[in-house]
Image (cartoon, rainbow, N blue to C red; front, side):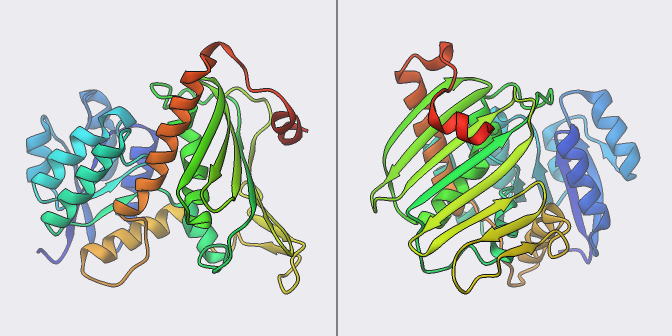
Length: 315
């Protein structure tokens, strides 16, 4: 491999721009190509990066060693499969795929071709930093809220795949047990769901793209107390013995995306690094698919989330 990794981005929207900026800032990496079905948008981002706007996916892949896929979620599987079959290393923005079978295929391709596949669940970087993963303890109950006004992006998929999938990933990692039952209600822009796991843990989720109140939070209830994380304020508060009552962690991980992209690049270079690998992201795809099926069973596209959870989280 060349001394400098040739990086490229598929999808020249807001998140594609973020990823291009991280590659530009990374040592030993040069941005060489941008691809988007909107040629003008690809050209605009390419000019900012000193890169070339590729006219086709094949031309793009010829020009890169590592790829970020920041295109719409429904395209992730097809693009990821082509990139991995071309033996490129792939950083896939979440979700990895929208079907469990597709997630499995991508993870298998990465292994078969000995290529690195990372998935953009960088909230885990924060959780690892504050010590809430790998505890050896399982919370009995989890509550998540990820709410805010419409942003105009990712509207081609429901709020489950756009926002809730971050929290589904965290819950799967913290609980470490298979889901036994899922109930959900909502429409494409606001969904409430409760997941009961085989080990008895229960996780509740609220995700909204139509809330006037911005909120990104998690509360984990353990036998000896609760831990609450405010992802917007970058703070943690705890009632558990032996834990600091309040921790401000914004200065610990000022740039979770940058940290995760750098971990991806380190893995590509064969260095030991932590990150969300393709196989690790499978559980969040399983849970998201189960939530979508559950709300579909209740004919919930015409039903707004209601009841105690919504009232408590919006209070």
